[in-house]
Image (cartoon, rainbow over all chains, first blue to last red; front, side, top):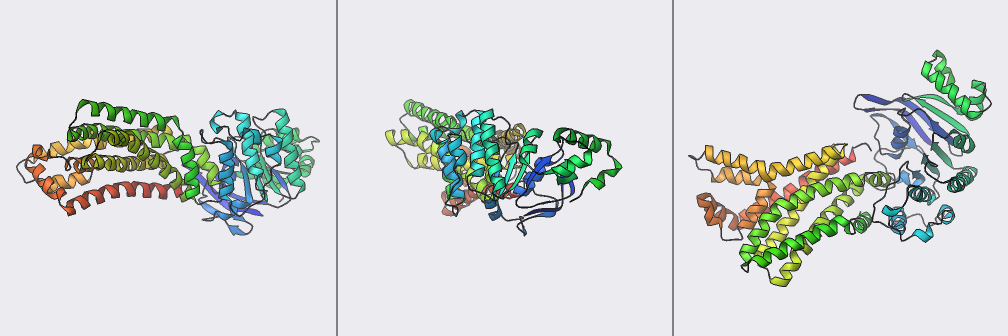
Length: 247
Length: 255
């Protein structure tokens, strides 16, 4: 569905992604992990076309995304920090997003109902709390029933009730066969929601396989210690690194 | 594009800044109308204030607007729309807001107390200068990754075109006083949008005689249709070129 073919990206002198290869398949859900500054956000932004790679190409449904914007109709994106024009109302924001996708007429209003956003329709976005803004971002990402969902720290800043609602929605979409990419530092959420782990370290793919095989490889039964072990290995720059990449 | 512009306008026209700026312009216009009954004096005073304030406000506001909306611009870039449309909708929203403020702020008092061609020219020049400096500000914003730096560059351009450049021109005129300078000064004027605006205004008033021989030459040049076209054309180039470059840079920028 999405294939990232040997992209390189430099910001100034800093090489953020080097010869980066990954494939994401429809019907699977991926946890994208890695320490701060490892290139997770750059990867996501490259897929969305916000960051333009220096070399290499990204294919979505077999088509290069370079100079293309129609492919973004397939993607629902929930940013890490959703900041919106202060004087725009929630209703206007939703109308605008709908106007940008004139072909799609059927909307997925599950989250709008569950988060009770309908009653806030006339509130200016500038007056919303961080959590409510996050709810708006989530509702927008799911609104068009996209085949691909990219969620950047989706549960950060949400209250426990909202977190459960969002998780239930994500699980529902996974069951419906969507492709889902999630980055998060909350490992419990990732274990619950995803079946595939991608660990990025210093701009390279360090691990890319199912969570099950991650556990087997690290000899751990639980997810968090397995990830911790993976992090230790990556820091030691274990020469066996390359053997870890199965896919 | 028009859809995006519509929503950008929803936001920007309701901003506190737009309201304060308009109110401020109304206040200036009203107080200057109170001081004198002579319309040409009114337009001269208004021009002197406008030529300093409008570029300054445009530059600062456009830069802050771009950086305040950066996250939202990013979100729009993740939607199925062209990059250039996202950029142009923001740019036009800012220019429209600044122009509307001038139209209402200076236009309302004019409706009340009368206006002549010089005052109409004043409105047009104000709108064009807003667009020029909004263009500079957006260019500075897309070229940098830091709000403070972008505001610094915008302010630098304002200081350069409003103050430094004139000193520079005076220096050249004094040091080359022995030579015929009309054509040179004409060329120098065209290289500065603020001066172009000022000249376009002054030529509507009968004070060019105060500027001596060069003034007479200017009067002759700019009063002709060709001269007027050249000046307006140059100002339009000043509006279009920075904005075009900014659109290009925006298309290739990383977010």
